[in-house]
Each structure stands twice: as C-alpha cells, then as structure tokens.
Length: 259
Length: 235
Image 1 (cartoon, rainbow over the protein chains, first blue to last red):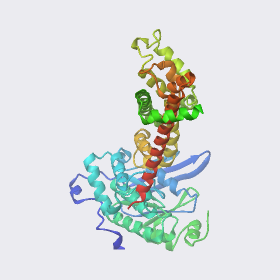
Image 2 (cartoon, each protein chain N blue to C red):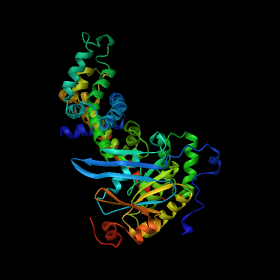
Image 3 (tube, rainbow over the protein chains, first blue to last red):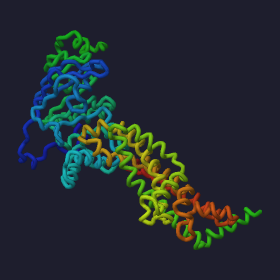
Image 4 (cartoon, rainbow over the protein chains, first blue to last red):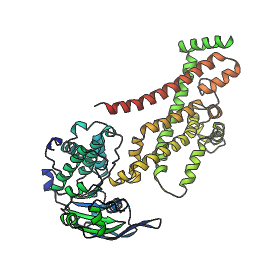
C-alpha cells in the first residue's frame, strides 16, 4: 500500500502550526433538519450532532436521503425545515472550512495542477501561496508526475485522487464524501481509502456516505443510519454492526434488500 | 468560354497580388476582424452572464438575442445609416461612409450570434459544473471566466459563425459604407459591383479569396480543437 505514496501525507505543514488556530467549526448540530421538494418530504426531522475526531459513515438504502444530508450540511442546498448549525459562524464564509468530494467530481478542462490552483484561487489565496501549496499537495498525493496532464485525461481513479487533493488543498476541518469510491476499481478504492485514513489521522473530520458495507466496516468509528428520510440510528460502529437496534438496520446489515 | 477566361484572369490577378485586389482584401479583413473582436469583447461576457444570471425579463432577453441572429443585414444597415446620417443622433461624428461605420454595422450583426451561442454553451457547462464550483466556493459571477475558459473550443465555433456572417454580408456595409473605391470597398460589395458591371475576373478572384479565407479559418479552429485533444493524451 505504501507504494501509492511518494512520501508521508501531512496535510498541515510544520510552518503553519504556528499560525493561530481558528476556533473549531465542530461540533456540527443539525436541528429538526428537513427538506421537501414538490410536496415530497425527502428528509424529515433529523437531529444529529457530529463531533470532531470520529470518522462518521452515513448508511442507508437508496433514496434514504444520504446525499441530500451531505448537501444540506455543505450548504449546497437550503433546508426547508430546521437548521444546520456550525459551532463557528464563519464556517460558511468565503474561505469555508468544509469541503465535499463528489462521487463523480467535475474536472476543469485544464491541467491537474490548474484544477488545484483554481480551488485555491476561489478560496482567496494569493498568487504565490497558491502555487506553493498546489505543488506541495500534488506531491503529497502522489500526483507530481501528472501535474501538467489535462485533468480530463486522467483515469477515473487518478481523477478522484486529484479531486481529493483539490479538496485537501483547501485544508478543510471537515470533509464530506459522497460515495467517493462507488465508480472506482478495487485498487483505486484502496488508494483513496488510504489517503482518507491519513487525512483522518491528521485531524480532518470525515463524514462519508457509502453503499458499500465492507467499506463502512473498514472505515467507520460511528454510523448514522438513514431510512426513508429519517434518522434511524446514530451509534458507534462496533455496536451498530454487531447489534443493530432497529429492524431496518438489522435487515440492512444482514445484507437484505430494503428500500 | 467567357467564364473560363475570366477564371484564368482571376487566378492571374491573385498570383500577381494585384494592388486593387490586395487593398480590398485587407480592408475587408480589417473591418470584419475589428467587428469580430468588438463583438467577442462584449458578447462573450454578456452571453455568459445571460446564462448564469436570474433576473426578470431574462426570457425576453434570450428570445430577443436569438431573434436578432436572423436580423436582415439591410435592415441593420438602414438603422445604422439613420443613426449615423447627418441629421441622425450620432450624425455629428461624421462616421457615415467610413470603415468605422462598417465596423459598427458588422458588430451589430455579429453580436446576437456571439451572445446566443455563448449563452447556450455556458448554460450547458454550468449545468455540469454548478455543484462542483459552488462547493469550491464560486459564485455564479465568479464562474463566468472559469466557464468561458473551459468552453473555449465551443466558443471558437461561435466566433467563427460570427466571422462567417460578417465576412459574407453585403447589405449593411453597402448602405453605411457606400462602396467607395479605395475607401470603403470590401470584398462582398466589390463582387456585387464588378459582377453587375460584367468585370467577372476581379469578382471571381475576390470570391475565391473569400472562400479560401473562410475555409482556412475553419480548418485552423478544427486543428486547434484536435491539438488540444492530442495534447491531452501525450504523457
């Protein structure tokens, strides 16, 4: 596994530690969160607190509202009921401190490096800082050799690593992941999972939606289980997988088809 | 066999770089390229803004831009003639029957094409990019340059369509330029005049050059798009 990395993945460089750390945006509190469109209640009355440190996996069958939950937390959609409360009001400011990795990330029609640079430019970094940080991030994610390649010509796995690098370059405190490996082969999946574990070790809070129970078992410290737009369980992973409380979760963990 | 001999004479005119011919070609190029640059400068950001902005009357603006793509050149010429004529609102500028007036006329003709095609291209791109760009912190306004750059190859086609319309039209430049020899005589107005006078060799020579220019420009744009795709697969 170490072959996929060119060096230790450190997302916060030593020099930056001396910078005064901004107040944490965690915990994230969802209060009575709901989303309805055209009279259909897609997410209903979700109360949830997400704390720093633990890797959260959001599970549930199709249409449970998992991706919707991420988009509401990330601010891509406005809730129709309830609230998304970050602990630091600045979390949604111009340089917001949470990122989202899509299942199929959109690569701009330019080089891999330029894709990272664009994200940094949008975050408001100056010309010099952008270049320095993009170089460092590409090297850390093993993409240095691909930096000048057109991003759209990279393989699916490479594109997802690049998307992760683009998100990580923004140094988010929370990273939302919407089935980041659903479209990837096992080797690319392993590479992404390793990079994610290293980010988690460096203190990034990960909140991942997945369909893959195996991945959930490998990954989760805690599980948020949704079913038909409602929060059914929110428990430590060990307890959830060994003894799910709700009949829906029991059936889901047993691999039965539920919807 | 008059056509054959006219054709031979036309090739001779081109081969000898006849000064009258060269002057007409250069003026045409200057006018059309200036008009195209002007239309691109205004039309690209305007089209992109129209694709991303949501405001009351947006639908009307889109329909208007689309409809103006079919604006008859003689009507455009007439309107600009009225505006620029001595008694018109901009008559004091003395622009009527100058190359500048022709640039204005052609810009007016091209602008709707550039705006409409740009809006379509950018709107489609935004559909694909919106979530990702917003996630990275981009506002729709900030996305305009990003999308213009990412749509560059489709947009070149839009500009070529504009170039085609401007270089091919006769009516507008004839009305506001006046087809004055050595001053406002373009390829198309010269072709119309020489043909009606029976001087087929100059008309044919200009026609050949006009065709050649259009084909060359389109070939360049095609190669550019191909090169980009090839460049993409080079390690």
